[in-house]
Image (tube, rainbow, N blue to C red):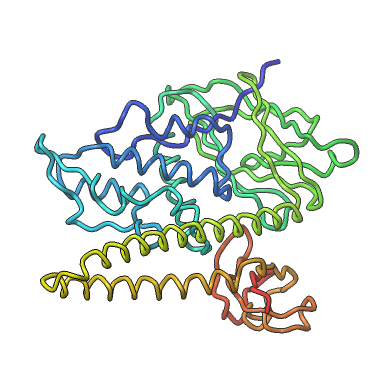
Length: 376
């Protein structure tokens, strides 16, 4: 019996002027869209950015809107865009290729450490993934999912694209899993209202509808799950244990801090080059005013880098999760209290449920919350 691949055609060219090689080509390499996989989402957003920066549009507003839909609103710094950034081209159209948004390096996405910026990246990738599904002409299954932070499963959306609105192209017959032995009995999914378990056959028509999908598993185990259908192959959805998921969060944050350090080193090199140029003009009285202006800017940049470097040094290697807060204490107090999990720190972020960001100072979260703390 053949099985249906859950192919995720994540993205398409978002606005006019799409290149033949677009962001969908990047997305099609993966079989399932994990909204918390930073490497996956940043690759999608970066490709969407490249597509926009290499395209021309009929108006300045259209060019700016395309860039904003491709991630121009993420974070700060190079990822900003204004109406004046759309310039007329020789062909009479408009482009944003000379904007700060287009000149920003790919590493800038990797250096974002805040939960808010990372959620912006995921949201931008998901929006484009949805856009691609709406424009594809393939009869396929698509899934976007978010692993639960406690390692007990995932929630997601199963999109069943059928080009003929009055037809279907097969049925979902069950699930496969890498879980073995008694562990298999603790694995299950729910597709819409139908519960699906390993080794149990069901019949769910694959039609045009969008439907919720959830899966549950033991929190201590890392496993993979796939949907089986009457057409195609199978594709795995990987779900980590709670411990492994926490390790990956810390590693991702450490990678971002390292990316920040590399950016700081690059900034220092640019300052050194600027200092050499300043020395070359010092002998010219006519350029004294220019020299003073450049020196002031260099001093301000160096101060900003020093402040950022000190913050990175303060956090580097000391970021830990306090995961036992039942939600009745603010993460500010929970991080600060040495009586909570036997160490004290400063709150960086509060995450509830499936990566929902809350304020560190919130008095009551209404349920369990993970507190990200920088240890003293």
